[in-house]
Image (cartoon, rainbow, N blue to C red; front, side, top):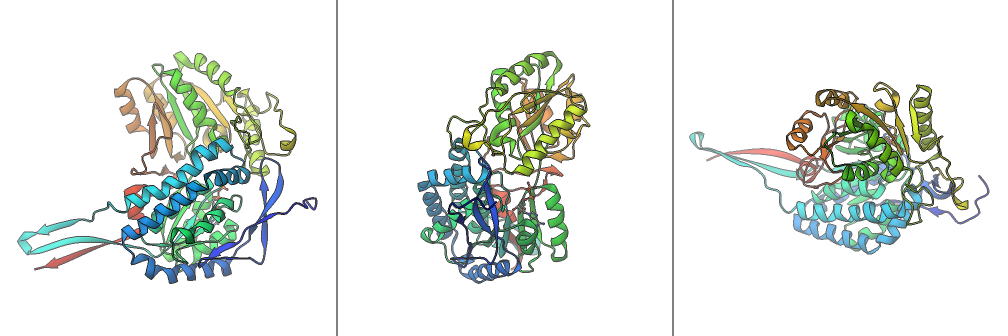
Length: 488
Ligand code: ADP
């Protein structure tokens, strides 16, 4: 609307070490007020071309540095972000709608840790060597950076997921063109201001802001970008796969989930309930690893449901900048409407909405009444083939259903197109291992959630993705391997 006379924050692309304005801009909203507060470059082919050119020019210098030299730059960058942690957290909360508490304790610390982790990890990789004494040969492998990496990231964990790609890409000696989500571009822009001070040569990291279909697609289609790392929706991944096929690009795709939690009757509910509330509603349910189908064994079903709903009702929804708030705003008006529509569909199918949307009333502070808020919502009596049990909702909505046997629950848990994460709750060690082996998921957490060792693979099966990222996996993805044979 025309009513916004307040000075808007205007972002610029970061190309070859310089901030450059763009000829057109996109409005960016503050999800907790519904106001436009920022303008994001609406980049296209031309801007992507300039960024790829800069990245290509920087490649010879950056790729010839030793791992130790690159490691020092990453560590310096980590220190600089950490020094400004509060400013980054405030910006992430305002731009994304997430609570300041989540941004302070999860998003920004993890962005810092991403750089520290890969700064260390890059120093410890070994290549292989084998001998064939009978034919007088030794074989060894060498690994080299691939070139200009195209990195496309989503809006739910903006700086966290962007740095999860930038850190390994540049640690391995690649140069980068990154395209953050058009809805959450501010913290990426803030990070660009620190790159020179960290000692990063110009052109190693370039950031173009803009829409997926325009800026993102220009990057995917660029012939000099041999590799794309993407986190986002399955639908967009299909489009990226098609567009990159003529170039035979290397792809890493981290996509959606429809993650089950399986609660056996011997589970420790004092641990399971608070953790499953977090796994369902943390970051407004806008994490690909969030639980959205809770299977509870019949004997404890009523007890679980009663306690779970009582606790869900205690989650405070409101101004994300208020440190006592547990649930912030959803990313956009359209997304809020989409999430709400799932609750309506469930009701129309005869499911019971036990708390939240359409059941309880939501009182918002004066300044937030036009924000995109929603109460944590628990749905029961929902059928396995209902869209609420099949499709990724990506909001604070979770379904609770009963099961009888281990065999049955494994089959039902696997009965979706996705395969990202699962949690299993039981005090029977044998059962925990048995079930973990049979679940179709790239990550299985038992008696916990979201605890990660970045050395180990992250990624999904089925429609949840292709490829894995993590210490060794990221190293392999962001480098090209060669086998050399020497006869003596
Ligand atoms: P969501 O549906 O959750 O918004 P998307 O997959 O649309 O997730 O978005 C994830 C990232 O992919 C964003 O940075 C977005 O701009 C980008 N994107 C969307 N469409 C395309 C496309 N056709 N090509 C390349 N990137 C895209």
